Length: 407
Image (tube, rainbow, N blue to C red; front, side, top):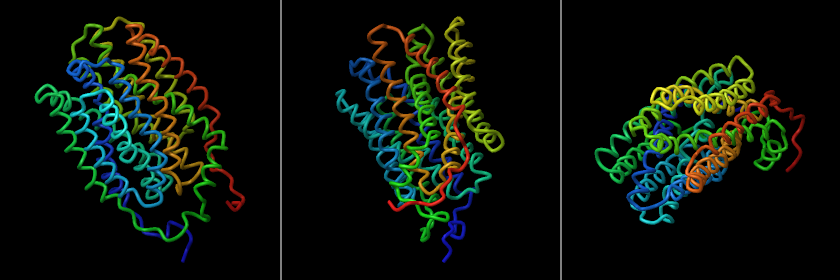
């Protein structure tokens, strides 16, 4: 029997993209609107903003820590089982989030449980299936399509979530979203890969060998550092911008439209980034994205704050929002291959989530201590400049493996 994976049956590309896109639409769309719950929950429960922010910080770090493990399980046992469990955990976490009456319970549900669920229902797992079932010459484009779907979910779900909160109350809104999260399980059937009986590629790498190789490779380290900055910026803005705008005297509708615009323009940004990654060096795309984010934040903080300035900033930032995802994951697949892609993608995303933890938590912490978000805004600018620089020396060529030594 041939040792090459192409001889084994695969899922059709259209099936992978359709089911993967719908799953990411739900999983990313639901979480994108969590900032809308900050004020109603803290006011109803009598909590500080730091209490809410800390729970979401734990959500992001739990997502990051669990990501390599769920990725490893998806690589080993298939994405289908991981996605089903993740969808059930997501629904349970949303229900318990609505019922939590203490900061500790809220951290356990909105933080730990939903974070674990997200690790098994988002990009690392989906991209592993794409990597194994889409030809290399279309891989970056396909990842852009999946990321664009997640972006469309953000655009679609934020107005829906705002409407649910206004019409049914914040608790009932979470119950409705829990039912939506359960749809991930049947959609996962479309990503049920055929069992593989042979090695993936000309040789078989152990998990230990793959980890030693990746963490000893300079470009992998640089990608992780850049992704840390991505997490810091997008989660700080996504969670705290609605409250920042309300503090500045703007209506809640402005924040809703702003988050929706981020999601809408993110559709175009992620798709274009994935498509450009097929033709141009991905490291240059990443460097440009991070640099432009810093420029956008500086301009936003420098001009008078009006609804129009918010909408322009949201459109620009939305175009750059998750456009880092397709090139980053495509580089990982290009360098290391697809055998352990979900696991390695999970480790890169873990760095992203450390940044997310700090972005969302520092936003609440520094606001409560200083009464302002200014320090965190300017920290996001400085980190963006750093990320633009560290991505420039990344090497995208496949790693040389003359021979694999015994583990």
